[in-house]
Image (cartoon, rainbow over all chains, first blue to last red; front, side):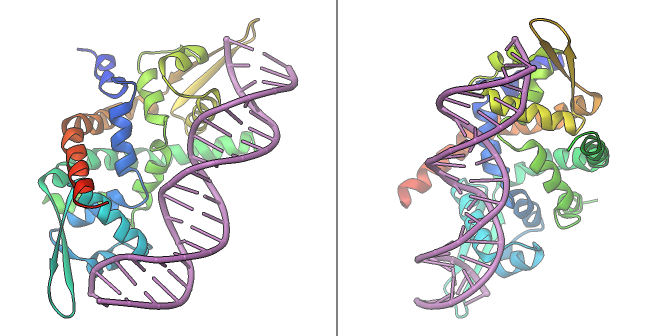
Length: 125
Length: 125
DNA sequence: CCGCATCCACCACGATACTG
DNA sequence: CAGTATCGTGGTGGATGCGG
């Protein structure tokens, strides 16, 4: 089976499936949160500390979406002060390997991509 | 080396590298175009036909960005009527395997994600 | 055939302030 | 501590029409 036939996995249904997932994981913070939770259970404030630049709002929103999609579990404790812990579900953990594949590609090629972009910017606007 | 240490590839520099790549490939059409070009050289109109739903504008825009980043090469022929062919560069081809990894995950888990989403929607708004 | 220009709707995201 | 509410904004992408 050629690689071209494999890419039917991507083009398959007109891109519906792949794009459904891209819409899910390709926002600004999702992958970062999933990678951070690979450490294990973390509290809201710990996540907030470990992910530089994220706002409370986006952390809350992204975690809600991840919970809704079954990638992250949320456990609230009835204490004072309140405590909430987040952890990856098995489905969430299964996202890590393909995410690492993508990250590996990123690290390997980001330099030449930016070089090409700079060169193109010189030739044009 | 534990998997947690691997995820440092993602969290590494505060997410700068991984997000630079996500910003590049996670728009609506990039991955679909790259997968389609895995067949080989294709003309503009052939791409337009093979990717259902894409507008001329977005096809042009996305191809320009891919060319700028060195993932796609563009060859224009001085003919009447005009003919332009697009093909993956080696860098562009190298994106296919990680993209397939992600697509594989998508196909494997999209059903349970949507089920979880539906169940969540029932429990809430 | 291939593409650019313009206009416009939407929404992801950030900043800020407030609550149990 | 762990959120919610509200407002403002830039950018993405769709529709349409024109140009080489």
